Amino acid sequence: MSTLESRYYDGTYLAENPDWDRADASWKAKLVASILAAHKLEPFTVCEVGCGTGDVLAHLAKSMPNARMTGYDISPQVVPFWNEHAKDGGNLEFHLGDFQEIDRNVYDVLLILDVFEHVRDPFSFLEKSLPHANHFVFHIPLDLSASSVARVSPLMDVRRKVGHLHYYTKDLALATLSDTGYEVIDWRYTGAALHAPNRTLRTRLTRSWSSPLRISKYW
Image 1 (tube, rainbow, N blue to C red):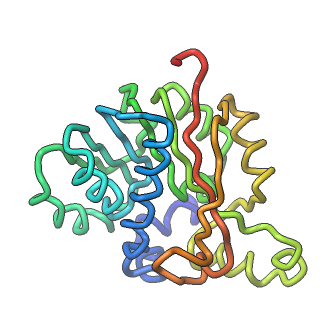
Image 2: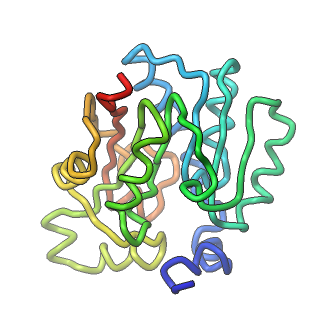
């Protein structure tokens, strides 16, 4: 295992982010619910890849009681957080491991929220995720700006603290999705730098956007 992945197994990431950005979970869940509602999507199955503490799914489970919520994460450090959700009911489950190696299901909606900027090869990750759902919702930090490039330290700080390996502008993010086979049907800025409850280094320096995507062959 390389040092790129080991931070999520050995506790390094948890040490830098002890609450795993739990404060943002309710805010993110509302964004997801809003964009699904805007497109009249009422999924029966929802999966989140890289679900972290599982709080986003827990919030969604309360507002979408008829949907089955499934979360995956590779870090054993998050299991104690998942145990807190045991009382939340039977429509919520979590799995430890690599989603793309374990799961063969096709979900109504797949959530990939602040994830693929952490992945060694985001292109392969996105291509392998494509068959797993009919619709997708992404939340992508936009780290790249003239200021961040000129100063350098903001990019290095998010690399060290929150593990961003790849940096995006809105157009680069959209191009990455398009290049890996996704059809964008909506996008919007979420204003994380201004509105996210957890005003960490990440949310102070970045803006993010979320988008449900339509895959033509499943539509």
